[in-house]
Amino acid sequence: MSNEQFIAVQGGNLRVRVDGPHDAPALVFSNSLGTTLEMWDAQAAKFSRDFRVVRYDTRGHGGSVVSPGAYSFDLLGSDVVAILDALDIARAHFCGISMGGFTGLWLGLNAASRMHSIAVCNSAAKIGTAEGWNTRSAMVREKGVAAMKELADSSPSRWFTEAFIAAQPQVVARAQSWIAGVDPQGYAGCCDALAGADVRDRIAGMAVRTLIVAGSADPVTTVADGRFMQEHIPGATLAEVPASHLSNLEAPQAFDDALGRFLRA
Image 1 (cartoon, rainbow, N blue to C red):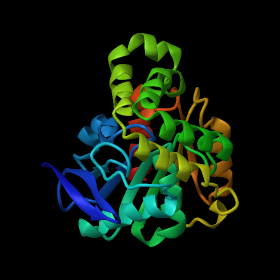
Image 2 (image 1 turned 180 degrees about the vertical axis):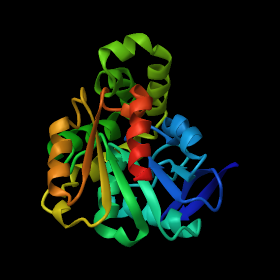
Image 3 (image 1 turned 60 degrees about the vertical axis):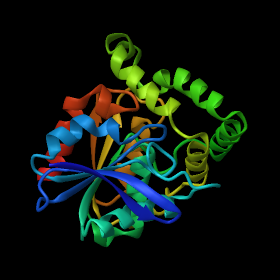
Image 4 (image 1 turned 45 degrees about the vertical axis):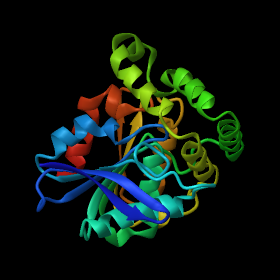
């Protein structure tokens, strides 16, 4: 059973899709910057056999609210808690990629009682630099839709390996369409959140079972970033998959195997 709904959060509604048995354990998937919940189509189809799979468009993306101004991970993380509350889910497994992975870290630090486990994929305890994110958010606010087209044109080299780009042009084009369609104000708001996001000195205090997934060819959030989290989060495990930044799209079998083993353990 699959259904799409809109759940009220601060400032508006989030677009949410739920698949799988209502009484199964909940598994929440969180998208990366510039994508939508459709990035998880393959995972939803697979994991909804055994889980109540919940996907959502992060604030500022897809069909979710585009609230004005800068966002923060206090806001983005609280959105996930609001989804759990609205769906009457006491505790959930959580899997996020890139920006969604950092949302997972926020949940592990601030809402641990609501988490069975978290999978932090192609992410880092600090992603990029504040200067870089601030420059990008200012550019997007200034140039609007034209900036999103530029980001869509340049995204394949950040998201996928050259070999995958050549072999799977339809997957790449679909991913480009997601970022091209994101509201510039929503994208910029999330860039602002990433500019201020740094939990390197806090993750040693996490007490939630954690999987780190790193792409062996990821130039954005590197294997070294993954190792740092694994070494500092108590009991965390690290899985390296043969992919660049959007590893669930480039190496779905390896990604699903790593996540599946973790969830079953």
